[in-house]
Image (cartoon, rainbow, N blue to C red):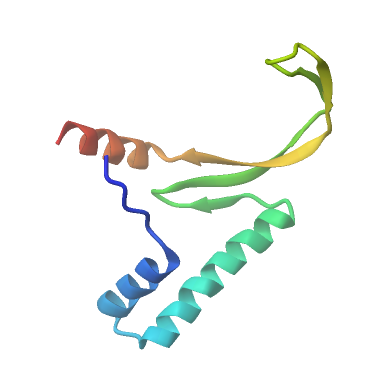
Length: 100
């Protein structure tokens, strides 16, 4: 596996090269898309990107956890968590990449 991480700058560079927008416009476009996605998730909406996957928020109930080191019971408070479910096409692409 590669240690490379895809960053916002990498995305805006790709938009700059493939679409032809200026670097500033490309960075603004990427930032705008990410802001729309995060705002929708904060509002409790589901974000579905065709051929990529679905992001959604899920409410988890309160429960009792256990400290594995001491065995002490600890309450875990209710919370919202972000989940991602990849599309079948994305799963196939990743699986095909593993074979190469």
